[in-house]
Amino acid sequence: MMLMQRSSVRPAGGRGRRALTVRSVAAAAPATKSVSGTMNALKAKGKVAFIPFICAGDPDLDTTSLALRKLDEVGADVIELGVPYSDPLADGPVIQGAATRALDKHTTLDKVIEMVRRTAPAMKAPLVMFTYYNPIMRKGLDNFARTIKEAGAAGLLVPDLPLEETVSVRAACEKAGIELVLLATPTTPQARMRAIAQASQGFVYLVSVTGVTGMKEQVSGRVEGLVSELKAVTDKPVCVGFGVSRAEHAKQIVSWGADGVICGSALVKALGEASSPAEGLQAMEKLARELRAATP
Image (cartoon, rainbow, N blue to C red; front, side, top):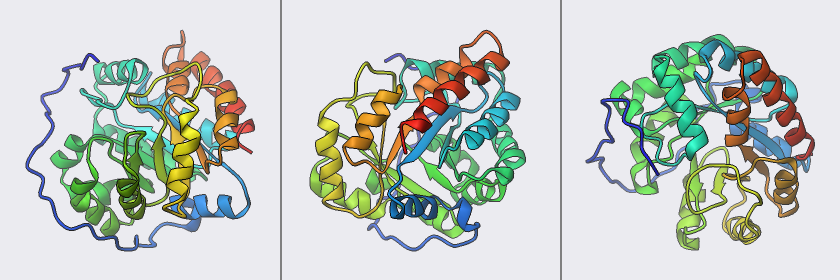
């Protein structure tokens, strides 16, 4: 995978490892904005969460704001918002391309947060910020968590931190009232799955493929077993992402017992690669409605 060097920021090393502890998240946000509250309410009703992802700043931040509102109107249960980054190690070509276009337009973390501040308070769905560790480190853990909370975010996902190195981030999130969502993959041993599920807040993000994000022709049948493995070690909601791009994919994942379906690359492509922002919003909305209908 080609990595795009568009930033002087480089991954940080030397993060201290400490014993894992889990404390309750401060109940600062309204119940309707809580990721765990939303997921648990859906699960109690036998409903499956539709969780779309888009990349901030592609094609521009004003369009991102409109897209978030549109996804909220369509009925997204939780929304993931990616912060563009120069070296998106977990992302495939579509999201890499979106991040590059956003960076080319001078999209920064601070600008993304200001857009969230203008947009999130009016949304029904809780917003989960998706960012790599370096921007968090540069802003300072406590400052970052407090700032995104004040802007209206409810959760955080940091894909380049292994479980053992999430302790400090989780502590800062708990202090601010942000829920930290962790990921499990097809290569995660069951004992480690149990530890990840125990530490994850809001839901457990199950990566459906060994590799990066992207649109696939079909979802691997192995996912059914992975969902079962996770559910054997946790009662927290399990949501499946990576490679989900069509309604039939969502229906298949629902039939396998997942509590949520996460779609990113297909929505990012529809929104960011259209001939105009207006056409991108229309294409994104059309796909989002199809996916929403497939996750009852």
